[in-house]
Length: 122
Image (cartoon, rainbow, N blue to C red):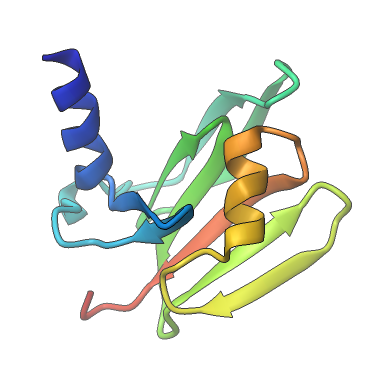
């Protein structure tokens, strides 16, 4: 029963794994879960260290394999990968490439965080 609840919540949060890639799909994402006002999001990194980040209003944040993911409304549907070395990589759409997906699943620390921009119609 716990496994089913985890899988259900995963779908409610708008992600799945297909062919080794993280795929974001917002069919079951409840917009009422988005923050009404900014708040501090605290999590543990893959190295076990506590980190905090400010989440703006109209966003939602959680972690996948200890990598923070922040959804925010935008006019452009894209995923922004923030690497630990300070570089960023942006891709259109809602499928994370296999290389960055693998870094997240392996918890190797190369991917620091993800920003997922959701268009209003999604």
